[in-house]
Image (tube, rainbow, N blue to C red):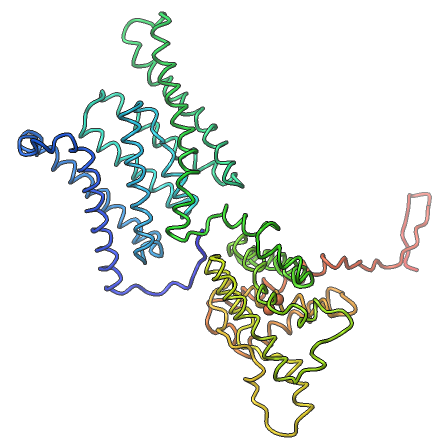
Length: 500
Ligand SMILES: [Fe+2]
Ligand SMILES: [Fe+2]
């Protein structure tokens, strides 16, 4: 779910650093597990270790083994994920939280009542589908190792618990992408109860059939009670997920699809303000969002991110909305100002947007795009106005945005979509050909001024973006296609068209 950034090559230092973090978290995990499992034995720990020392070492080795495999999985499959300590901490915190909850519920309620899909749901929403599948396997094995160590239930129950935990985690992941809001996840919780209960029923009934077919109501009663626990486990997965997701989002500053949807609804605080105080800018932002969405889809970037960042790209205009053409009536405030002052007011909206987004604790990603969406482009209108008023030398930088240039593909998309929207809106005849010309010149002008020098957008991407923008913009402005003039004639062979 994270935005793809330009991936830099890994140095040995990066590898050692990530290894060290992993090892530290392994130690913390071991301490937590050790404390929980040995809590009652602390009084006679020496005696306990003399009897169970070998088992303890065996368990520790198994945990070390799966954590090592987990490290190599991320090293080869998703290096970005372990490139900083925050993400590694996130993975281990999910494991720790799951262990504590699963252990507590397993002890106090029933083995089958554990929140089996919690890791799957959390990693899916906070990180992504592929890592969620892998972490489901890891957490399932991890709990199995712990269960084998504690050994309070029967071996069959542990195997059942292993199967239930793995399959319900997977099923939760397969259905999770359908959840549009946080509360829709409750639906997934109820849905995963079906396979859990089916598995419990089959496993339990097969363990009953040992030569005698179960006919007694009491035999079935035990099965139904365990199925009830399975139901509890499925629902608890969703309930606990809803409870722990906000602290995770906050502590690790994760931008989940749910938070993204809340931030892009028209009820979001800043967007509401923009709608009331700068309706022109609000409409423009909505339009740019639509264009950014189409462009992101065309080049395989994250559509939700592009849409959301586009909605917030011009919030800096809230500082003095009436200085921007889209919010002006007949009266232009810039007529009374020097071109230098005008340019200064206009260009400050990028920085103001950045500050406003940061001060509202919105995602850093939005703030970066607000700052970068004009790059270091000159404000052509006021530069031209100043040139007319002076005979001397003018420094173009005094009339240019302060940058930085777009740093990601999505920032580049928003830069192009923003300028294209303004260019096409200003056109008299919005034919596809004219729109194509305008968008092409927007892109070429930015390429000439090296605005894409700091992001990894390719010429192929730029071509696809151009097509997507022409399609969307001509569609939006309801361009009527000119049909050739045809006259229809009825003949004995049917209707026939003829050019006029
Ligand atoms: Fe802007
Ligand atoms: Fe804009």
